[in-house]
Image 1 (cartoon, helix red, strand yellow):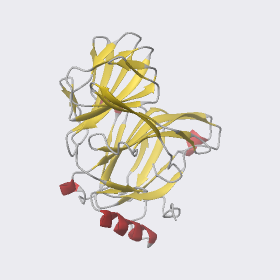
Image 2: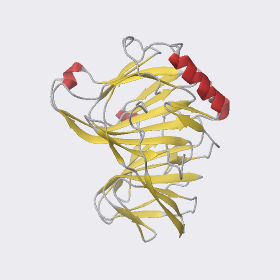
Image 3: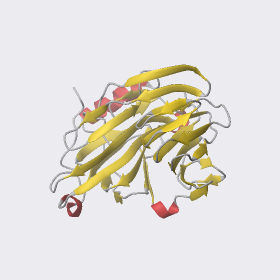
Image 4: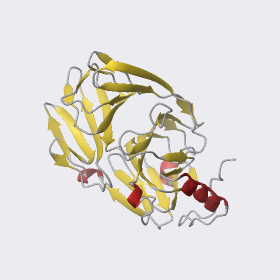
Length: 304
């Protein structure tokens, strides 16, 4: 989804000397008119968790007939977008000719590489009725050696994402390897993305990773005598055997992986080189990016 109109300030609470806990991030909700998002990454205090440089929680939102998601074509470079829905549907189109409805449980991976343009809208059958949308959108920074690879699009249906149960806790390994299971979703560096649904009193030992964070999409948890409230992301160091305990029914996303080094981010562009972002901005302004197949007329202008 475009970074347009969802630049929000974040209120972050640093927790020092709390063992495995490095930082807690509390995002501020941004009202986009038809729906809202909570921007979690990047922040001034923490730009990335592993290779993850952007994390938005969309909704939950309910749309009246005729309303819904309608994000015009916009560009990306040197990153990969990951879209995952709890409820609803988004229709993805891009400049490679991809046309794909994203539904709950699917993983939608769009690799921008040297440059791609996409739009996110909804099918007329969806917008014709009252409907809901709830999900996460994340961006992965690509390793420097792969920033300028050819753009690509991958879609993984829900049934292909490995699921397991650990001491009664349902878990899905979305990307990377955790709990002895490896996801089929393509990665470019050591990457972790896991979803878990805990009932009150249930525990989950976090997978190990160089860097990792726990986002509470719903519910409340506790770790090391610290509360992990709803909509917070808690960043943990690589201390082993860290557990979270659900205080209420909770749905969480665990993200992380290897540190890829410094990245610049501006609008919808991410790169290890500031001059590359400047070039992308000039290319978009001059309309040198390819058009989205089937959605060629509209576009989001470069912010002034």
